[in-house]
Amino acid sequence: MRPHPDDIGPEPHAPLPPLPGHSSRGRLERVLRRGEFAVTAELNPPDSGDAEDVYERAHIFEGWVDGINATDGSGAHCHMSSVAICALLTRIGYSPVMQISCRDYNRIAIQGNVLGAAALGVCNVLALTGDGVQCGDHPEAKPVFDLDSTSLLHTLRTMRDEQRFLSGRKLSSAPQLFLGAAENPFAPPFDFRPLRLAKKIAAGAQFCQTQYCFDVPRFRQFMARVRDLGLHEKCFILVGVGPLASARTAKWMRANVAGVHIPDPVIARLEGAADQKREGKRLCIDIIQEVREIPGVAGIHVMAYRQEEYVSEIVHESGVLRGRTPWRRDFQPRLEAVESLGSG
Amino acid sequence: MLTPAAFEPAGRRPPMVGSWRPRLFAVRHAAAAERFYAGFERVLLALAPLARRVGYDRAEGTVALVERAVKGPLFDCRMCGQCVLSSTGMSCPMNCPKALRNGPCGGVRQDGTCEVYPDMPCVWVQAWEGSRRMADGDRIAEAQPPVDHRLKGTSSWLRVMRAKRPEPAPEGARKGAATG
Image 1 (cartoon, rainbow over the protein chains, first blue to last red):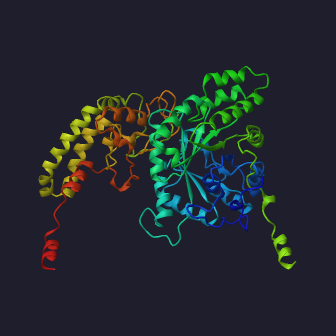
Image 2: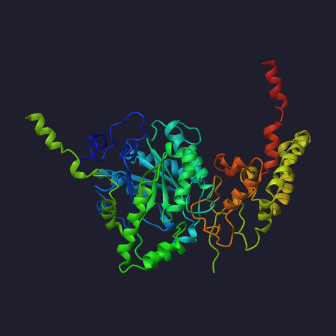
Image 3: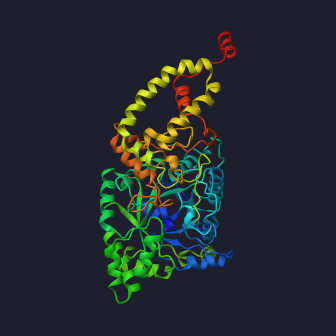
């Protein structure tokens, strides 16, 4: 099935023609507002200064996802910047999600970067606190944390809706952005998590991408509270999922990656499998099929670190797109074709 | 082993193992602390005329010194100058190595300890528990604006007094207003 006509603009690299009631001119917001089950994926940024490395990594997602998150120094490791990756991705026509981590910039740098990103065609921003510097490759660095993720969202919304900086100084043109937040329903204090999401929504969050979900019962509890608070009606919730390569990787992640919770039965299931990699993929698909049925879930966010080549397979086998095909380059009407129509 | 780097709001070194015990005591007794603070605010406001006579700016040094001496041991206060203890379950958010003032990060460990300092109970897990003990604990849901870093080291008590009992406009300005 071809993409919805609203998702294709005249020029692949330019923001789409504006739609009423939409705050951005990006594809992700359109897919979500139409009520489609959205799929986003995480791009592992290269340690290089070569644009080709970015295009190569994005290409494997083409036609399978509605948004590509470019991480911003994830795990406090240094990589190509999120803003640059997103700018490169817009040149082709992909719909990137720029991540901003409060760890690395103060409010002056953040606001400047956001204006630059908007000018380069970036339509989606995800506001993050950021992992502490202690877990990265530069533990001796000075962490910034000038804003927190909630006040960052408030700042971005102020720029967009009030057309001014946090200082009050006017912008001559507001950045048209779709604002996202992260939430980790799997970390304590569990009862506070839905309220924290409510706080972020009040500050401006329109979509939310969660941390990896390996504990579906815990996620159900979180969503029940989210629905009680009516948050799912104000914010599109995308559940974080991903394949585990092996039981060993799972144990390593649980011990070393901040905020990742993997229950023992999950590890036992991998350990018991003859082909652990295959079982990891199967587990990911099973979780997707469980969470997609939970009321209030608007999509999934696939984080397949170093297994990006399996994203298309996981999306296909789980059937979440229901026959829909997200934007691909070959759906873009060719200019020559239009010209020949005109002359003929 | 090197101590991991952390945000140090008051230029203080990262906490030592055990140094947060008094802070946990304050959270455990958040309800009492809340009642005390309500009374204390009335005392502060009663003292406002005195502070106003001395001049808020002139009182700053002395009051900040007393505030640091009192709140330091009790809450591990970092003297951010814009105290939000009553909205954070009496757990000072400036002790969070990420200086988060609106809620916990996603890195909190399963046992409720901090991502950056695995020995330290997460400031926001404590804040949530403290807030549940307080009569007005739902203030934890109020969004806090970003920190004004200019206020670091100044007294929040005087700020409360200034806000609720403002200094009269200087003589000249008042005369100007009257005649103009």
